Length: 108
Image (cartoon, rainbow, N blue to C red; front, side, top):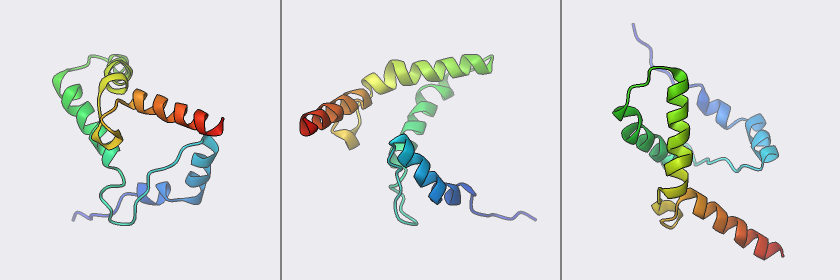
């Protein structure tokens, strides 16, 4: 008999300890309401792109080679070049720099 159950991660990501750790790290967690499919949309989009553009196109002989390829994909192409509609068709690095500059200007 097969039993389907919800993943444990749901409770982990909504826990008070997780929220406090995010606050300590200066990170705002992405949380939607229960049943909201949009709360992880950007993350899901990233992993779909990673899978389609890198993982499905290559075979890796070692874990180290896979790690290096993922690092190069993220830091060499995705963050500096991949534009996103959700952040004004900017790359993640451009978006971050713009946000940091705006914050510096606002705080003075």
